[in-house]
Amino acid sequence: MSVIGNTELTFSEEQGMILDTAREFCRDKSSIGAVRAQLDSESGYDSATWNEMVALGWLGIALPEACGGSQLGISGVVPVVECMGRALLGTPFISTTLAAQLIARLGTSELHERFLPGVIGGAPATLALLENSDWGDTRVRCAVDGKGVMHGVKKFVADAGAAQWFAVSVVCEGEHAVAIVSKDQLAPGALRENTLIDETKRAASVDFTGVSVAPENLITGDNVLSVLQDVKLIGALLVAAEAAGAAGACLDTVVEYLKTRKQFGKLIGSYQALKHPTVEILTSVDSSRSFIYHAATLMSDDALDKDAEIACRMAKVQATETLLFAGDRAVQFHGGMGFTYECDAQLYIRRAQWSQQQFGDAQHHRKRLAALLLDLV
View 1 (cartoon, rainbow, N blue to C red):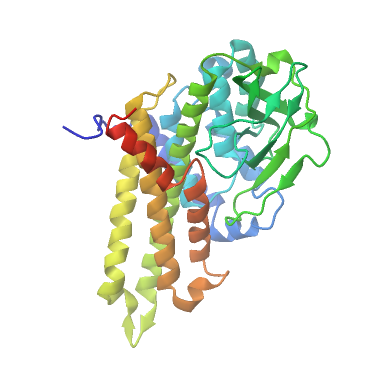
View 2: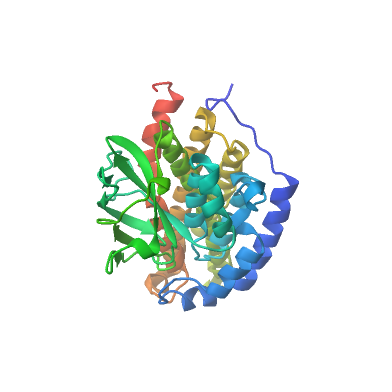
């Protein structure tokens, strides 16, 4: 009997079709040159590429048909994110998908009708959850007072500059809640851009102090905390899928260099000291994809169960650790050139450092996995 209880793994025809389309699209739209061209841009992504993604219906893959979505669930989103990771394509796709999932799982039909069609139509959105850099800190200080006025700052809000609205975790009358805040409600200077190690990503600290939240934009209830937890796990899974894709591309970069670079008259790929770590990257990428698609198999529109939680946490650990190892080896194998900004290995090791921290690093998830696998919770 498996220690994780559930080892089911399926790959549907729909996932295969999405993967083929996404792979071709991302390869065409996000070459390394195109990625580097966006590093210094304000938004970090090309709006024309974003509009094409919207036209393909990617923003509605996991959303209900009643709102114009495809209702294929998070399992249908995973192949898209994997391909985006492989191409280092930076867009607000993950942030928007997670914000929409929160509304879909927690909001009323009225909220669905007000926000989800806009997401499908291309309006970026994001989650505002962190108040410090620790994903393990469960305390929420950002509050909505009795008059409906917010007080507090959220940090490292992904794609805050592009977002049209924010789903903000708050406390209201001592209970967990979610406030929906439009971008135009923010005071001038409320956004302070963060400097990130991965320049393909964007994030900011957002001061929500003074924002008035209308009653219809404040989501309360006994299930708020559990849904927030589920969305964080979905976030961990999507970051894992993105990291696995990036690790695969990093492996291609390493192999290409080993096949062309000569030292002492021999291709450096002929040396076992370089062959063995390269094979380790390959097997780790394959393992990462297995973990990710196993977790995707267990995803549903209902509350995530224990097996799904275990699968998401294991996928996050495996994929981000794989990318970290691959990025490190890519820099090392390129020698002195690998430490220069112009070397593409830098893009992967920077993405690895960013991915490791999103929705909890490996230590964060292993600590919780130990309790889950040993039945301590």
